[in-house]
Image (cartoon, rainbow over all chains, first blue to last red; front, side, top):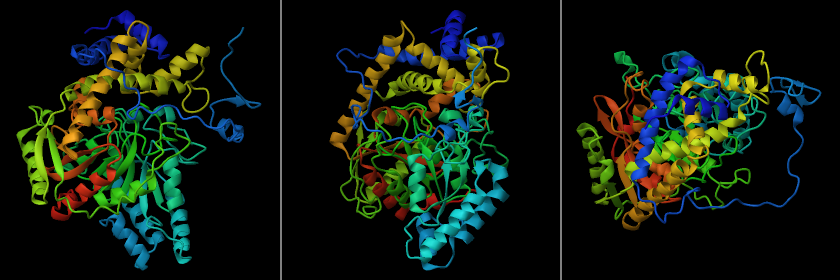
Length: 95
Length: 485
């Protein structure tokens, strides 16, 4: 199994990870090896097999629609890289 | 005192022979003096530990002490600790001080245990050698005096090495594909990965949410039982946690094993296993026969597909879980971001290490348009087949036994050049996580002076049976008592 340079660049955009040019050859090799390992799956006969998402086949539990959390904005923002007036700061989005 | 188990230390405290302040001081001094050799701790919480020890002694004086009151231990640095840096072994979280406790952390706090610090681990629990930690590799105490720098296993390598070096009697850990059992095996200690959903994942930094499970590490099975008594149970804050009564795991440790039906999965005694390792495992199984157990061969026909299924499912879930690290709300943020996209992409490029990035990229690929059915859905179907193998096996036998790893602890750097070589380290442990059943690693002898781990796998929620089997082995063998030079 091989993965192309274009695929790696596309996936890096989707994953929001910047890649430098010199990292790509090693990634082609490593990801290609991982996908070759994964390709063993294609040999398995999975006709009529239900996918398993939770080992105990549990479903999401629902709770009563009541307010249980208290406001902890100050505690949460105290550990943020940049805040102002109770807001998280990011680079300007709208010019 | 540092060679004693949790159960023994608890009795010493109860008898008044030693105070928690004295005991905590002794362990902290050992960590300060010895851990530069191992690098098993990322953070040492000395002041907090001494304050907690003092409180524990006061509680005891008031007659309010339990088994854990005043007993020192450590947390894997993946469990959030209110006010104490929690890094998950990553540069991304090197400055992260959580404003809340994980449920596991809160449970140990409520039990009066004294946390000495946070142990080293593979970055975001992705690794089998502890070499992907931003805070440097951990040295396995075994073989170190010969000048061999061997891996302690991973991802819970810091917890395992600290226990093997007698820096703590017990430590928490997590297991997504073998991260408790493999390091426990390579460091010669006892570890338990409970049934998926048995222990709350709230506040445990997520890697692959349908596989992650918190568990226990200590020298003895009895201490693992004491830990699980504190950790197990329903938690409304974790939507996958199971609502089911928790037994006293120490109550059944001394049950006789007469009539126990042991299955040996033939796929786990394959060519990958070295003859010397196989000999040790078969010797341990013989001990069980002497204790009255019967042994037969069983088959897990789809086990050979476990690694392939895992390396779709785990990276896919990781790519979703780790999307939260964006440089905005907490954790690392790159310098001088030019725009929002630059903030995201550079923060993540600089904050994550190479193994984490590889897995995010693989997971993103497997989930992307055009590939979802071929990879993710296919892997989940194979996961069902693997689970069915275990269900069928447990119709015939009570427990499964196998090696934990194909070989003993390897030398650092030996498997870092090719990720797939490292992934094969977990060939005997990963199927258990896909099925969600509980499993232990128990010391079972030595090969070339390095510890060997016996894996004992149980049916869903049969942790008590595993602990019973491990405890009984430890009554007739002394492998778990051996000390590294």
